[in-house]
Image: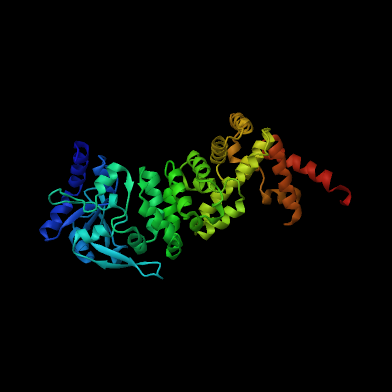
Length: 424
């Protein structure tokens, strides 16, 4: 292990030192596992990252051991063997050695606790994650060659991939994230297993599929992961209506947009309709807020394509846009740049928006009179005429910009005289 890796490992061990003493004194062993070990072996230590651990202690014992030292404790995952805590300012997730096996017809893993770290590592998703560090002596436990695979940039499973993916089919989708996020190349056996078992993803809860896919989606550049989805047929299980698109184009557009959920989800449906985006996202049980934001970005991009740059056009667009106008404009510009589309129209709109902002508060459009004030001004009862009057004031504001209350009252009287005189 090189000096960078050793230093990163020592930093991780130092962060876990308080817990190490507690578990050792109680006759239990504690191991660092997962991402912190993988990154340490690669010579990186992420000081803000949560630390994942595994132990032979059962969940109730873990809860008791960390209870006095922890400044925060959460036990929502206890039935799955996981206790979360904050000790010395660092967050930990401590999981009892376990084996997870899927019933062929079940959406949820059945958890069995174990006593051996080697058995636990065999149940991990990929060899690069199937490494552990004994916190008592700092020794690296790597029974499946994860360190060599990390150096060779290869993605493999600890067990036969048909076994690993059979236990948790979501790992097939997770492979795409590791390919794109860590620059790994899947070995042939892994690819073949996914191609053969792709329909097994259907037994996984939709919410888990959505969450894993979104992690891929939010990477700096998910293109290689998309390539894996298309190559293996996984795309048909996640986004069947996008299977006809090429992964390179999809990845290029997605990577160009802001790495926020709404923009990334919206990027998947460029060239399609807002309705199809809404339907697919709802099937994946995305939140109503996320669906609304993504659909609004898609609609805003389409509308920007036909919106002029006059003050009236800009005011109307800003008022009616259902997401922050800067986010909508940035999304449209990113998609245009990634797709090779002309941007003159968007640049013109952006310039007009900036100029208008310099002279008025276009982002906080508000009418000088509300419905109650309109009724009082014109002596009206609630009814269609009130709405028509408000529509007039709104159109007037789009055309002329902000006005005072007295100006609005005068314009309202003139409007009513012109439109409702002589019994009309």
